[in-house]
Length: 265
Image (cartoon, rainbow, N blue to C red; front, top):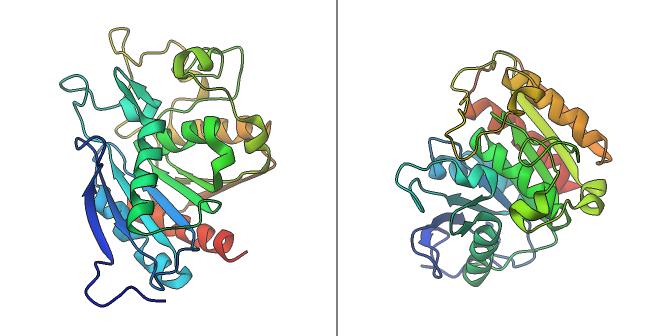
């Protein structure tokens, strides 16, 4: 049934266990506790509220909940902005952090934990596909939109360029079984080449000498990611949005179209 009159249907909440982190949320229009949840993860601009708002029309059409995390800069080290993209930074495990957000949101508005969909744009797409590498079993669908760097499923390349030693780096193993059944959709703009790409030098905590193996542009890198995922996942699709550069809105719209098909199946 719909939420009670006067009950907030959307909001922004500090994580009870760690108030440095927040998440924006929206209940499903029906208020039912058995509806799917879409998690939408921001890029380096940290426009977390836009991530929620972009999918409100989808949420209304499909009666789903929305959750958009905020992963702020400088959590462990002043100026460190990229830790969430690689799932860890000193003192912060972003996989555990997302799970804590899901638990906190479930207290606000219960959802069907068997139908979790994950979307990420740019830096959020880095988080999303790396999260899926270790937690695919939790997801019902994944959309990766224009990541700047990618992790290939390659046990000869060290983490994060590949999956070698990821258990030592993350304390988690590749979720091959979950990846084998996970629907994955990869999206990039036709004009998205190298604008804003971060090339990391040896002094960067996330430097990898193998970062260029996936290609020199976002289009090349997402194509490499697609080939890599197809080696372990049975349902990988690709989409190029004509005329789009590194632009959130048209890629989010394309993601919503694919997600609607998945949710209604």
